[in-house]
Length: 97
Image 1 (cartoon, rainbow, N blue to C red):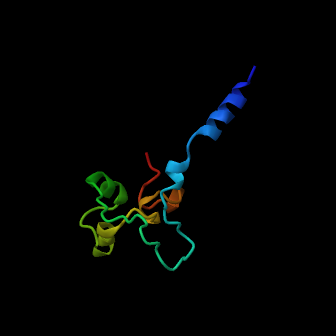
Image 2: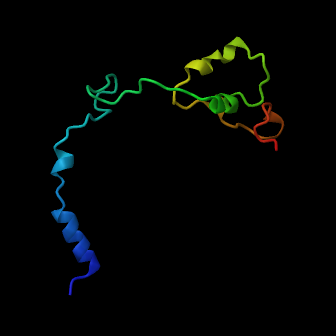
Image 3: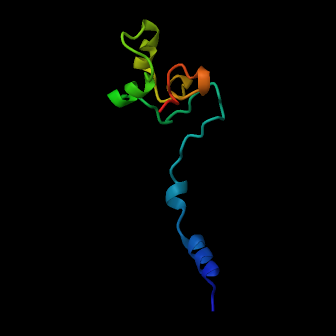
C-alpha cells in the first residue's frame, strides 16, 4: 500500500511545469544599474484620504510646505508615516491613546 507521501510526490512529479517554464520572466539584479526589459513598472499610485490622515498624524493644519512631498510619495518605505520612539520623544502622539 502506498503512503500519502509517495502519492503526493508522484502527483508533483507528474504535474506539468511546462506552462510555468515556457514564460520567460525578467530577472532583476543581474544588472543592478539597469531595469530589465519587460519588468513590471508601477505607473500610478493613488493615496486616499485615510492614508494622508495617517501620514499627518499629530500635525495640525496649516501644513508646512515641507510636507508637500507626501503628494508624490510612492509605495516605497518612509519613516515619516510610521510610529517612532515612545515617551518624551513621541512628539507626534503616535503612541498616545
